Image (cartoon, rainbow, N blue to C red; front, side):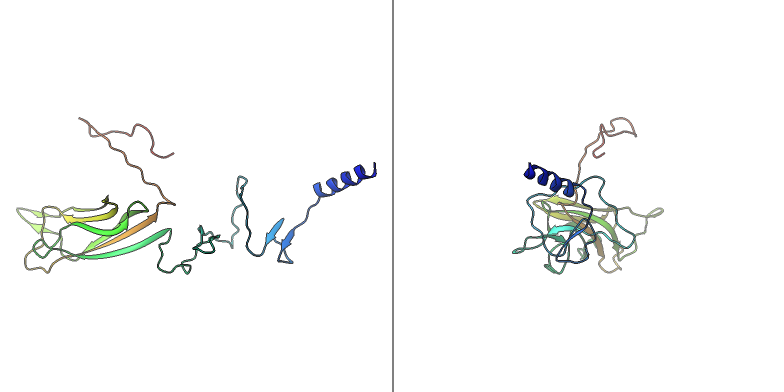
Length: 206
């Protein structure tokens, strides 16, 4: 009988404890505060997750490089030349002197199975107006596409070449490069048939 009463009191005391426990810290901030590394076979988050305070910030959580292989906040000092979750890359591409503005294919050598590439902005060094019967402002064709396992770039003012008196043109192409672990790409082919309007059959994301 004594043993049963003792167990009941113990369970009751645990159930109604309201305290903060610290490991390697004398001043825990939450119910459990660990000042150091922690190893677990699984982790469950309740919803909604706690909101950040006014003086707090967010960061990417990643696996740090070997041999540690720890889940930690992203820090580019781990491997200085390694890619970040989101990268900004700029290429300055000098065109063929005979055409002056045409980059038919430029291989970035960026692995298209690992990364997504978006051209965020561009610039061209030469004037882009030309004169025929009227003044014309050519429209640039600028896009990135995956081919052969890497990302290729195309840049051209179709139907236009700078005047022969101008130097060879130089494209500045600014890329946003996303790690596919953090982003997805979707493709959809649509046929408007005889109409000028249309709609997707279903939302690609929702």
